[in-house]
Length: 254
Ligand SMILES: N[C@@H](CCC(=O)N[C@@H](CS)C(=O)NCC(=O)O)C(=O)O
View 1 (tube, rainbow, N blue to C red):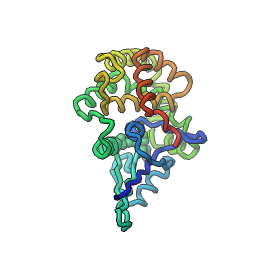
View 2: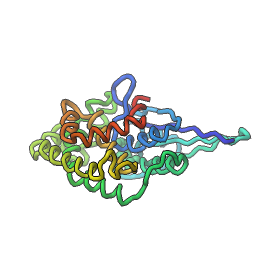
View 3: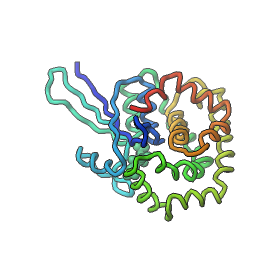
View 4: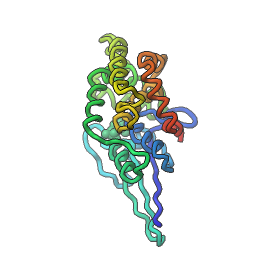
């Protein structure tokens, strides 16, 4: 029988061991953990992503972020021991979908209507405050070189230093927006009784929502996570607990 090996590429925090903190990365890592498929993590610092992925022959996506993580390398060795086949999945959705297709149990509903609806809800009610209060503090949890890269690249769309952008968002009412947004979030997630958006049925939309929460938990500074958790109330606690019980949050450091 052919054997398949997964290597998952992620951006490290400055802790030892490193932790997974990025929402996009969590969309895929969450699915890997939920499926309980064996994999190893390779940590790649921000300024090295382009170099490492380029060296593997992965084509540039162009634009402001030509090479991104997560990325998953799939190495399949044929039963006869002949040359292994290597493929690269370079987007979180593609990784998650590939895993669901190749490891059908436990199943994840990939109905795009629910994913679109959940992401729309998040974008309309929470993205702005998460950008101000979480994304702007990401450099604080990154190793030195990655933090410098982040602070150099993000102002290209923020049009100002990251710290100033955070203050601008606070002046525009980011905390109030986050509080109100988390209440809408809890109403949306709990509408079918929880723990997930569709009640007991797990969908990719749940992994998207989990990714944003873990972003606040792992990269948010000060008491941002305590606040998010408090505003999300029992619905959020039940949602996170259900993922914990499924082993999704266990493999955070490797
Ligand atoms: N659509 C992509 C987006 C991934 C993405 O934006 N990744 C960021 C980290 S959160 C990245 O690798 N950025 C590289 C850079 O800034 O150079 C996905 O979900 O896989």
